[in-house]
Length: 129
Image 1: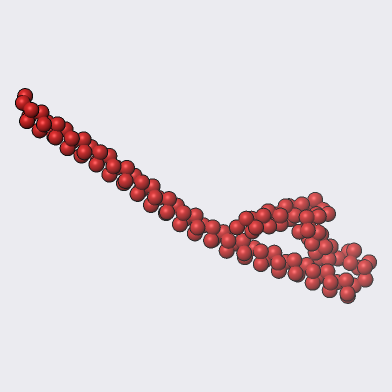
Image 2: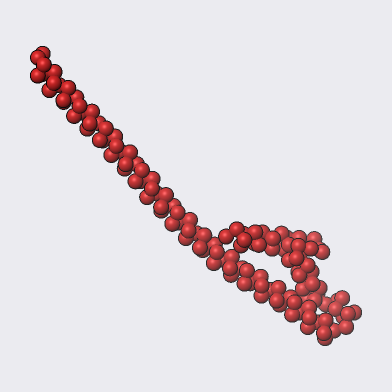
């Protein structure tokens, strides 16, 4: 083969190599694009789920606040209107007092331990979000 044929063969090989690298670069670009789009989609889904969870947590926090207010009202009303001896037998009064101690992380009865734990878990979750 002559010099000219060698030059043509080398040029053809270069073109084939360039086509190979271009195809490889295209595959890499497509892969990165797919990964970025997938990450965006996953992020959007996570944000949506977190927003829903936040709505639920806020509703629970409002419900918990209302329950705390109700127990305080029950305690105050009964302390004003009933003698201490009557209060010792009043289930609603006792449950209100025990509940308030439980949410302050001082459960006095075994059945109030889950209330105290759940109250603490909710506080941690609200603080985290």
